[in-house]
Length: 269
Image (cartoon, rainbow, N blue to C red):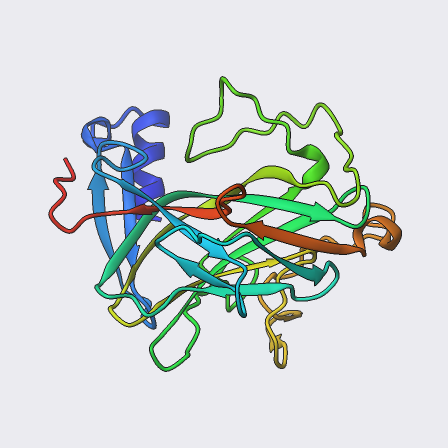
């Protein structure tokens, strides 16, 4: 409320309260399992000194995330209308700050003429406890989420950035079953410091993120996606969006998550 009042007092009342001298970017730095945040004021977005880092998907075994690209060509298939696949890193070797926008570049194929991708970033402690926060519509909101209907994969090349794909949504490009397509899924900006030993995870499915176990009894029962779900049968007929989706990895299909890693020795202003 104090922040909003300063803003409106300056622009609507004309009060000289110094708002015009404030840095344009304010970051509330979050840490696992606490509601306390660290306010940090910045001059740029994405943050100056961001180290853009790729976490590669490897379809070998149960599915993993690795800082090195896999050498073998593999694919991992899942039924679209399920919880999909969760890909995980090894425990982090050092404390890691992730602050900024993110992108999942995926190489996918479908058994039908279209598919939806629901991409959810998670993190887990060294004891397997999931990192989540109170969100706007869900009391256990995961770190970040992104969505894309693959037939809407067309990009505006002039407006797109490596860290922010800009989809035109003006051309419906249907899929040929079995063909592999490169897609860029925009993911919400993130701000989190993960301690050493924690794991980063990426859940990819063809339905809204749905955490296993009993629903949280908020104002409506919820498992991680709140009340606003993508489940209307007219928009998502099962004969099209209930097929099987495959994520392809390897040298020719370098599926990866692009992360904004913030070095500890970075100068913020």
